[in-house]
Amino acid sequence: MFDSQQQRQALSDTIRDLHQRGWCDGTGGNFSLVLQKMPLRLLMAPSGIEKRKIEADELIEVDSSGKVIQGEGRASAETDMHLKIIEQTNAKAVLHTHSITATWLSNHYKNTGKITIEGWEMLKGLQGINSHSTSISLPILLNNQNLAQLSQAAGELVNDAPYGLLVAGHGLYAWGESLNEARRHVEILEFLLELCWREQLIGSQKS
Ligand SMILES: CSCCC(=O)C(=O)COP(=O)(O)O
Ligand SMILES: [Zn+2]
Image 1 (cartoon, rainbow, N blue to C red):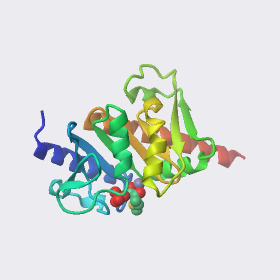
Image 2: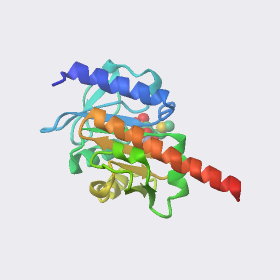
Image 3: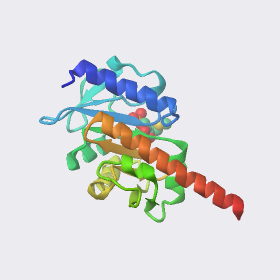
Image 4: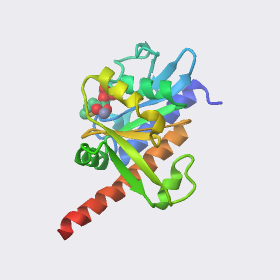
């Protein structure tokens, strides 16, 4: 079992790595790790912090109502989304990225409410998938600055979602039963979205 300092280090390392991938530029994205389930204690990046240089001691602890219980700064504007996903699934970590690919595709497909992805070997990186011959539907929610409404809408979808969902014109939420699993799911989903985007680009060049 990791102690709290190791968890801080693991989460801040993950955030900086995701920044290096170009998936949370500037202050974009937010990230959480469950320290304790009952009562809930969530380790999170504070609101408005640059993800490029976040350090372990800058992370804050948040309770089940989104109140900061340890550390400096405000809770993320999107804390409700993290709380809802953790409340409704077995997630121990939620990673929210703002890649160009997820931002563009979620906007492009927002009227269909989902992106269907099928047939790729990399699908097997998602927990529970054992064959390329499968199909996932990544739900897309319309963006909403009212986080109570956005998280309620997310709550209706998370149990059928493939460890991820998109918010239109905004980004990806991915989760897992450990920080490692959540990170793998971000990498897999971002990879699959990148394939969709490149297919779109090739398609639009042909026509
Ligand atoms: C330029 S980031 C806009 C806000 C956002 O979508 C995000 O993920 C970061 O919000 P936070 O309050 O966690 O800084
Ligand atoms: Zn965001």
